[in-house]
Figure: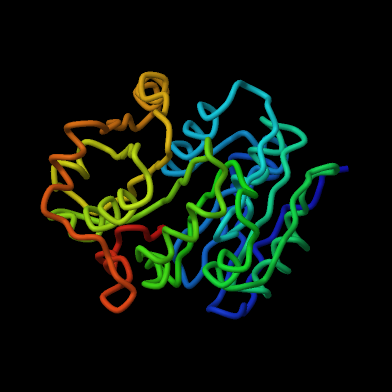
Length: 283
């Protein structure tokens, strides 16, 4: 008996129209889009498969934050289809994870069609990311992953010094803050975000494709911030081996990149730039 072909699922969620589309090349793999913008890719049989480049780069940072297999307490701001929580449950079993997603209907759709694996210690919370962060206990997370998009833009209230102060408060001393941020040259948004993170964190790392850094196109950059040096040599090796290799910028080169940018105050905060047509669209 052949399994029936999986069918796409379309549902109105709180912030748009979500679609789950089966991947024709991988048996139990799904792409989640919201209003046509790709949000997440999940392979239920192979949770360590990270299809999107930015997700793979976040995965590389997560792999290098502690010795392999060691469980971590992780707070995810932005849920999507729970790609990284699944990855961590597989690569660091026993990790305690909280996922904060503003779209309750989206969480329900994902839980129904793409259930989490047995034993994954992942708690889902329908809430605003900053409100949740402000109420979270101090020193309660080893890692904070920010991958929050209202449509295709990072909301303004998740870009300011006040927000970063809350993130630093929730992280333990050795903890790390990771973010997925979109931008293009001249990088006003990205540079302001690095300047904002520098108000709380001594160590900053930027991972992006050379074409994006050279101003050729709009794209995602992965930022990592911590109070301790991050393993940039390991990150450079891992990102260089990817299908789309990335550069790892830190230290003097990154300080030069940020020079002149000002930290963002709440009253001046703006969302990340609108992607150009077709930047993240799918066929």
